[in-house]
Amino acid sequence: MREQITLQCQECKRRNYTGTRDKRKKTERLEMKKFCRFDRKHTVHREIK
Image (cartoon, rainbow, N blue to C red; front, side, top):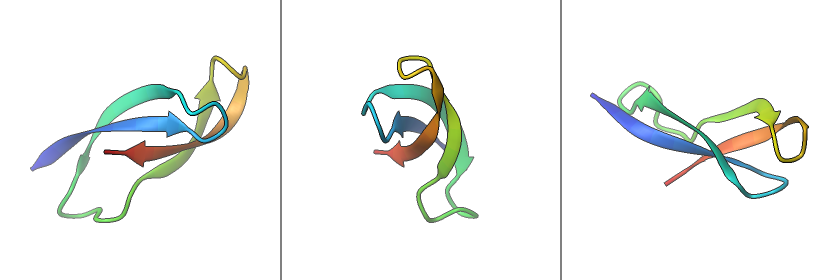
């Protein structure tokens, strides 16, 4: 059972990435470092609802 997630940049607060995750295996919110095209650098992106 997978659910759609959206990743939001923590610096510019824009929603840049979407994806899926298994909500039975990963119960906490996803956080990863990805490229933000608006800031033009790698920043931390967190999962939002």
